[in-house]
Length: 422
Image (cartoon, rainbow, N blue to C red; front, side, top):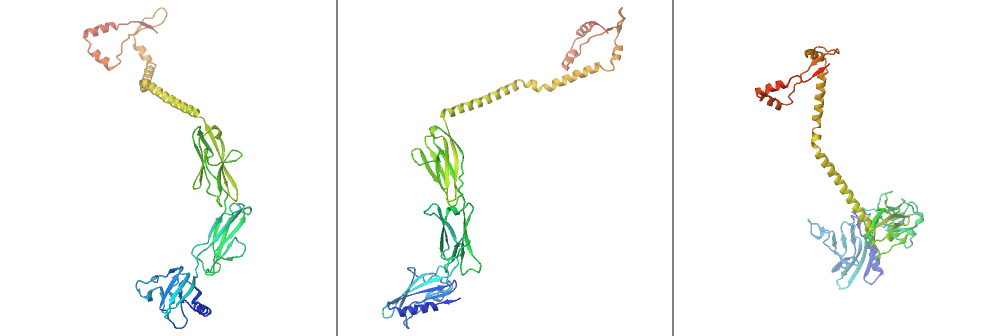
């Protein structure tokens, strides 16, 4: 830990000997962690009876930095010595400033001393790059600043040129020398940084690119709002609304209302008419380029809207009516649809019966049937008896309940009714 007082004390003695107005002024530089001794009255062996220290116009708080374990003056970071000097134990960034000592001597005379304390420091942050609007729209100004560094740093814009010792450096360029995607860089150097160590900041230039909906529709006698946003340009673009192929300017009034919410630009058209139909442009411009978003507004008559609504209702009613008719038709034919499989089964049964008749046993059937004597034409005559076959269990039950008389009548009725010639 270094003790910084020798240079300041020598400067103070020289100042006091060269001026008789009872006031001195000196400068002192300390690094973080050093012990700084700010002298007050050191002429002769006279000890001030009262000493007050001020920093930047405010009285210094001597309790600053008092150790909790040692609240005595020896444990204070700031203390006033017997000769009126201000002792700072362990200088930190923030101690820099303009100090003034006011002392009262035993003969009731007063004495003042001014000390400018500078603390060497390198900020942990990087330099700050920003864009500053220039008075000439064809030019662009960029600022680079790095505050809190002491001694002052060296700054430079671009890759060429010499460094300048300053906390702030500005550069003005013609827009014709700039291009989309170009990077502007500011580099900073400081003596407390290691060799070859630099800090920098940069800005990337971008052309405007407004975005939004390209089509809009409105009804007559209503209001419509067109919107677009532009968030990518740097330097920031100036965005306005224009109308027609002639790019006529639009101003707020009884017809148009221009508004902005952040980076969203709005154009509201009041009491829309057929004259408002056409193309509108969201015009964005910065020092690099001009870009536009084209929005086409279509104005419809109110009757057209009503006609479209009526057609829509008619189509909807037609679809619903068709669905009802189809449902009703299916419901009325539900028996045929459900019994479709039984009819197929009946057809299959009929096919089986025919197959039995046309089987190889046909000859046995013919031999078992009694035949009549041949007639003169040489053909055989076969006697065929036709009997009724019961079709269901219900008919079997009726046959079982029939009386003997009814059975006899039935047998008589089942006499040969016809002769079939084969």
